Length: 118
Length: 113
Image (cartoon, rainbow over all chains, first blue to last red; front, side, top):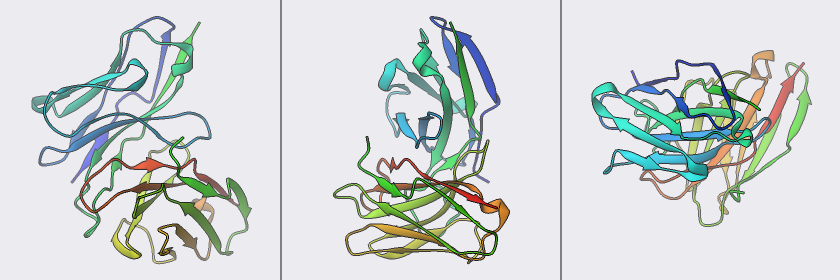
């Protein structure tokens, strides 16, 4: 079965500290991988995506993620966290293959809530 | 801002009622997907519409139905509302059948009492 695991439900970091959010997936092939950010009461904003090629992916807002096939992981990193980064972060894989003919559908993890201390 | 707009932003319904949520896709996009995000959870795929046809469905009962119109806007209808239907409903639009980036709207917060 296809699934995404985000082991950390809640993380608190100090402003200026580095950040790593973990994501592991089960897919059965090489998936497309995504990280989204969601501010309270808002929709999802795409931070970065991996389709193929270079396994280190750069995204918006200074985020990057590394695809490690051997570990089935796609961890999100940022070298220096800003207070505005406080939000919920979702890892997702696609396209899900269990839902008939639909393409472009994602399986999301349960999210990691990031708090930033001054 | 993604160009995907959803309405209404919030609504409250009573158990057993019916609700319709609306989504205007980004210009040039012909595919709309709907997701349900319960509190503290990640979004769950409900179904997808491509050129006015449903072309995939997640593990949701038939009382969740949808439509896509010729201008590619979409509706999500939920009949016989249950308390567990309380969630944020997200619409995502994209272009074509092959995988391309999906752009999400701000969501509709549905509360069933």
